[in-house]
Image (tube, rainbow over all chains, first blue to last red; front, side, top):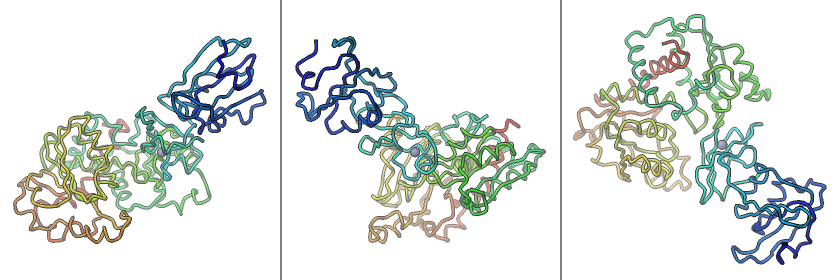
Length: 152
Length: 302
Ligand SMILES: [Zn+2]
């Protein structure tokens, strides 16, 4: 049941297709998921037309099945992303990404005077607003809004 | 143990706040007690603050405890590059309680997670300074006879002033009404106004410091600092507008008291000092009793 759109990037036998990534965040998604250090077969396409929102990108990772907390990390930059789990060229499962109420060690607190930006302390941000995204730092209590979110 | 720490004023419920206020009054009546006898309190000041440190160390001594520690980072191992984590891990093996001031924001929360003994935050950068807030509340209770239903005016730097933000949060338990008087550049940030809205607490904003203060029960003054202004001309325009002078107090309520976290620069004219409504020096003294109450309560000694 591969659609025509998916065929614009070569099909995979087993693995995960991540679709509906905003084109501008393709490389961020690659970095968040650690695909830049992954030896699996990976193909991606970008600047593909999307009726929903501007240009989109798609990534296909062969023989890789992400855990939920792993994949939810990309919600910070690609909350519309959709996952297709592929087995034997067929989509066997579809998944959406979810914004987690707490993100640990993924994004930076924007406050330069925060302990997490000055010593070896793992960041811990608590979701306070979904639209637009806003997180409160567990340590310095400052709010980091979507436009200041920086992925570690 | 770490759950007993006082890192942020939001860690204390209304009941805990009232307990500290009530205890502070008891310690004021009988300031010398031996509750901390045999206990060691570490006083770790990674940045100097003589006023806060002396207040804490007086409180510890009046309770009969012993103090170890340092009064600025240059005399501590942090100048040799020791991390906060390592310092706290070491000191929490020596002491029963740690009082800490540190220039980095969030450092107190982090320390409370690493420490095996409770931490009292004596200021973490521009973030929190909860013992200041509790002494402010004790001062308000003492002068007004209650914390409930008061009209609180905050004047000056309401944008960066952490004392006003913490006081606002703590007072929200007691059905207050707020009036904010500040230049445009230093207005109360939206996040606090949204928060007040969500609690249904009324507030009014003013840019002029005029006879509207005639309705005030508490006038909380803060410093307007030049370095907060991007445009020095803006500072020149406002620096003399937010000064309290004795003549402005003529039509104010009898129960009005003027608070200020100190030190002041010029925002309260010295001619106010002799007015019975001036309370900022007594307020500082209340800090010792409030800190005795906080220490005794955190260590479960009362
Ligand atoms: Zn932070």
